[in-house]
Image (cartoon, rainbow, N blue to C red; front, side):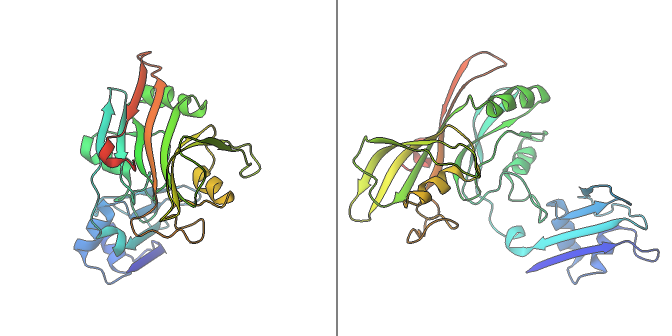
Amino acid sequence: MRIIIKKEVKKNDPKNLVDFIGSHCDLSKIKIKKALGDGCGWVRGKGYKPAKVARKAKTELKSGERVEFYYDSDILECEIPEIFPVHETGNWGVWYKPAGILAQGSKFGDRLSIERMIEVQTKRKVFLIHRLDREASGLMMFAYTKLGASKIGKLWRDATVRKVYQAEVLGILGIPEEVDKIDLALDEKESLTTYKIVEVDEKSQTSKVEVRIKTGRYHQIRRHFNMIDHPLMGDPKYGKGNKNEEGMKLVACALAFKDPISNKNIEINLQKNFCLF
């Protein structure tokens, strides 16, 4: 069930957030409070002020403010997969993101956002450094301090982090150990993906590949392999004939870089049991 409320607070409306929302829908106060705690409520000030998340049910409202409430029972009632830290320092950490988890929250809340999940688990503010598609799993980096956000964020902006992915694609790409590249522009920008064939399966007509990207375009790996007619298995957006009940076969399995704070060379690998191969 989805409920979307976008209402301006009038003079005679309830001035308590949970009561205001309750006056515009049939949800119980308990469900509204839980949804607000999960980031589904927004309050926009008068004029052109941006909307801000309002998590407290007793948030006081003023006439002329605008309340937005986005409720999706599929999101708020689903089971949350486990996340865990793989490597941490005082300034940053690398975490495991399961498939199905967002990098950040949306208007429908941040219950399924790894950013919010880490904040709840660590009880500290975290800073998102980069993104990983909701359908993908693997390593994601977050900063714990403003210094970490600035220094580590620059590594990603300068593309000095070595990122390794594992993927399973439709079709036989070649022979094991063969290395190739996809050098095709995306969004009219230069884009380069390199890959090594690890294993081919004649029976299922699929190939397992280790992938590295030199650029970080939107859905780069997914789009590039689809452009050469070898879409990722289980990709819900790109490709034909690549359905897979186990979900999309893409895992961010390794990161390597020089920590700009400690000046140490860092190499982080995802545990074998969370990888594709």
